[in-house]
Image (cartoon, rainbow, N blue to C red; front, side, top):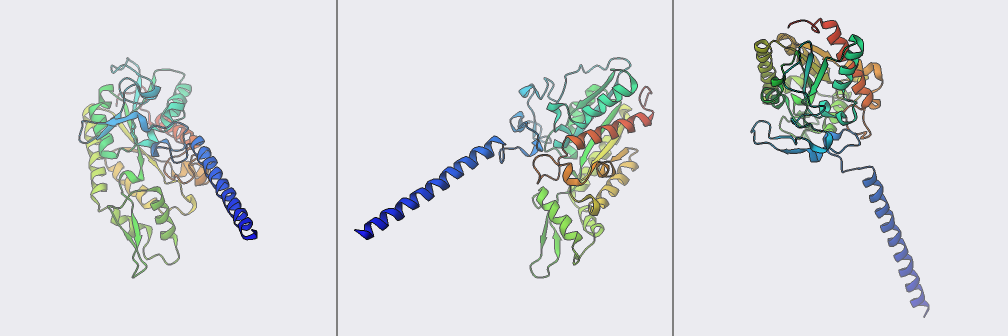
Length: 335
């Protein structure tokens, strides 16, 4: 009888324990769903909007996917983010077409995007409403897709300036591994491109026993087809700028990781060098973001996301872009 009682107690305690675990897991699941953990599209960057449903497959073999016109009040009827404007540019209007990936598209629904910030800053500074920024950013696009997007859609709007929001993974597919035999880090150009890999690169290139310098590491990256295709797309944009008489600004977004020991600087420098050869203006946001604060203070609520700046980063980027355009002398002048 005593054995049966002990067994019943053991089974009762086990049932209670298992029940408690199940209740805990169910509660955790509800909490995570409440904050959309794991349900965020990579393009959301910590924003409260889930952008995943606003894409559709594109018939264009280069674009591969595109935004759904009119989706959820985020995409306008012409298929880009923000307010719809007529293609014909009114006389006296200064128009900017912004190209880019998820960083450029990010937070547009909440009016915190850097292009919107720049537009409003210029309107205040100049005391006029005839300043228009059109956001053609699409999450996941690379440089070739962005320039192709401009050829298909953006150029119809006769911009005075085209901006390219350049995330450094647009030109380099980052991937790294450590050779088990030698302990040395190897670069794999076809490896999966993830923020965690960029963090890995940063940590390993800064290690006391690193087998290569950041400069040596990125020299490998500059030999890849991805980099060459990105530079070819910028060269195509330069041709279009000469044909259609608009200016180009490359806005370089840094990786949001350890600004004090930033190993990605060689890539910024090489990109700026190539852009200036094409007569583009360059706005490198690394010093701008450093002035805002440490890298982790510019990340969104997804703290592991080292790609997408939060609203404070967009504000700083937009104000810096507005200042560059004010100083350029382009506004009110024929390119």
